[in-house]
Image (cartoon, one colour):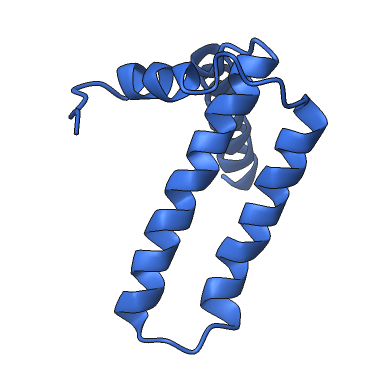
Length: 102
């Protein structure tokens, strides 16, 4: 097992696992949706202890993020730039909302 020091390195290693995969983007999106529904059902429908649910959610979250790396590779998305842009936009919206309340 390899322990990565930086999230970006781990992301790229996960993308590399899908390098020669021929799955189309739509199929990958459908896989992400299915995994999200599974994640949701763990907390809402599964009869298990809180710890068992947390362990299952942990596993499913890993598979969701791995599948996101597949999609970002397939569609050539710079995830860092996309997340940075969205985070900055959300931060600005929250600041604007806070200023309107005061």
